[in-house]
Image (cartoon, rainbow, N blue to C red; front, side):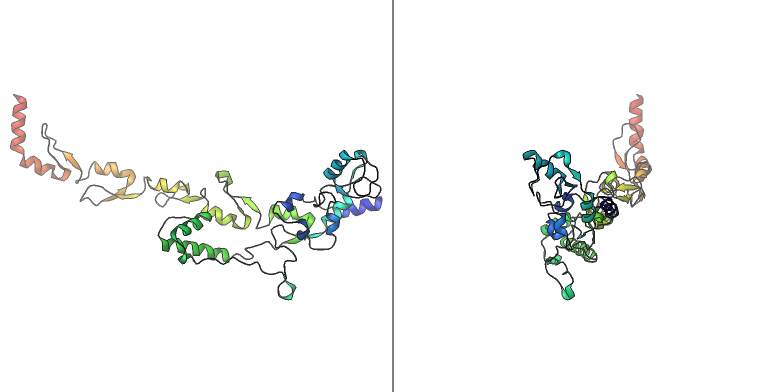
Amino acid sequence: RNWGGLLCAALSTAALPKPEDLEMAGIPIQTAWLEEGKDMAECPVCLMVLEEPTVGCPELHALCKQCFVAELHQRKQCPICGHATDESRLQRCRLAEGLIGQLRMRCKHGPEEGAGRGEGGAPPRAKRAKLEPAQSMSVDDLRKELGRRGLDTKGKKGELAARLEEHRRSDAGVEGAQTCSWRGRVCQLVQHLAESCGFEPVACPNAAAGCKESVLRKDAARHASETCAYRKNRCAHCSKPFEAQALPGHEGSCPSAQIECPNPGCGVTVARGSLVAHRELCGMEEVGCPCPGCEERMTRADVGRHEEASQAVHLERAWQRAE
């Protein structure tokens, strides 16, 4: 018993991955293991990797704890050898945990083993689906594909095709863009998935700002900086940061944006926030005659000429008001 305890302590270096760590991606457990000994990791009842291996009979048959308890609820005996037992005799088998933890396996996002070998016994390279040239796609298909990738869908066909091809080239430049090449111990799988696997779905780095997208870890940085609706971009006019989805609305009303005076013939460009002050002085602004009773309208620059030309009419109206 002491020797078993020492061996168990030496082998149990980390917690076992739960069965769902393997099954959630739809990978049969048998294809995830790389070496002999995988049979010892399989529960004879649920046929999945042992979760909290438990023994409770003289033959020390190991089952998942939940499987053993469920079997004992039906009959008080080991389902493998038939020896009588009950829940009070169940013990967690840390020796089995340690042995299983040291078996080698592939990442759940890796290619299945035994699916064929390349030259020199190397695993075959993942086959890429043949992509239709962007220039041959219809505008609707281009917009659908760009939208699926989180890219801008506005523009003419040539612009859309160029945008898609550029994004495809950046995808092709990612080494091993199809599957994860990690190989390691079972006891290292959980840490690999949590910290370094590029093909594990993770929350967008802009999640705190409100993004609810789930992206592959290897794509997270590019998503956060290029396509995420919650990424921060600076206004081209005032240089203040805004979320990408709010930026177009801001730029359409930014006080620092340079706009042309709307008065025909003026041609002066001013900041949007200064437009009202400019129009109060603009010579091409339409104004009314300052003489009471005169309803003529003209540009501010023509007021003087109008007053000079209409002096007699203005004096007559003044006498009429005085009488």
